[in-house]
Image (cartoon, rainbow, N blue to C red; front, side, top):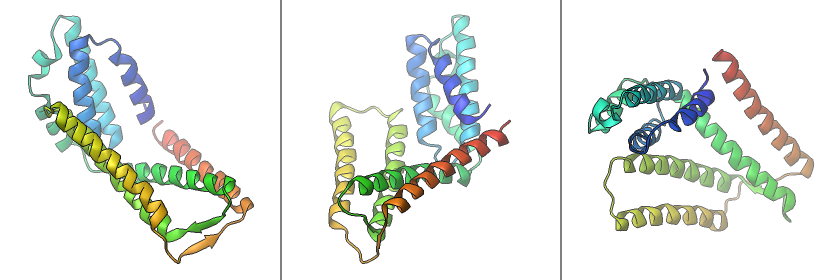
Length: 211
């Protein structure tokens, strides 16, 4: 079963959890996914599904997830993460999809805008900034699963994320470099089609390898 199918199956099985176990497993899953950016996603999702099935088995005999796994699921999650190998491909795939989405959005804006000039330097700076920000947000979400935040702390985290996003938008206005290209409409459309084809091809190859 490929990663996307594991995620979908996981989502369906979670509907069978009672309220208490759903909270327990939801925090565990958030922590695992937030802390596993550089890990093998396939293995993470397989292990997450195994844990879910164990919780459902325990639930069927009247045992709670907390009783089955203990009151400190963070320890269970950390042990699991420590035994999952680092897989640069998972990170690179995530980065590829993120950067591709950024490219497509930028080219769409150029297509319907008044200028077809691309500032390559700005493009690279904002892209790197966005990628770092996405990783940071995932880390914050993962870390928040087992931290007791008061309302002020939650507001502060939300403010930091919002500030980071605003700063990124500001970069697109104030960062100007001499590395510019003038693109024709035909080139932009062709490039968008190429990116979409590459993404589709990547997903297809990944699916074939996992059969």
